[in-house]
Length: 209
Image (cartoon, rainbow, N blue to C red):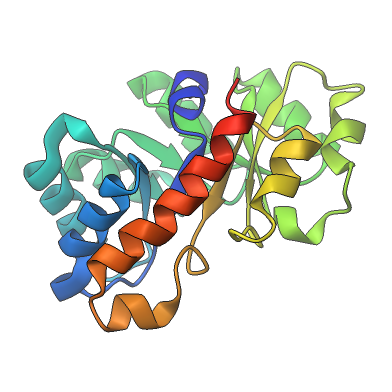
């Protein structure tokens, strides 16, 4: 998971994107230099969309399955072709399953206890969720006693505040519905979406390690 985040510090979270817009949207994101996406497993047709992205773009994009809250979803996501999983919570059975099947996982944490549990199962790149509801400096406090862990901020992240999360020391961010104006997606303004995303990815380059 560390290698995935190092190469892709910005993950686009796709939830409830209509099928007739989906591949065009992913293509616009890729042209804007976002090459890593999360397809939420509580989206209708999530598995179908994972397969479609894999077929259309192959190895040019990293495809993650999000909202993997139990082993049943993990198995479905794996069968569909997802390359890594994300969870909003610290589910021990999901962590065991991913370790057994050698699937990269970004488990969700909020508290020191959550972080400790993840570390005990060998996971040290973690998803802080909901990051937008924590105080600035929260991960600095977590990393004091739990310095093995690094974090990806998800929940409440937007293009406007993204830089502040990197400045706090987050290794990456996940951005969902706020990534681009909703009207651009609804109107199919793919070139405009690419331009908006390029602004975000170019701004992030100064935080690249």
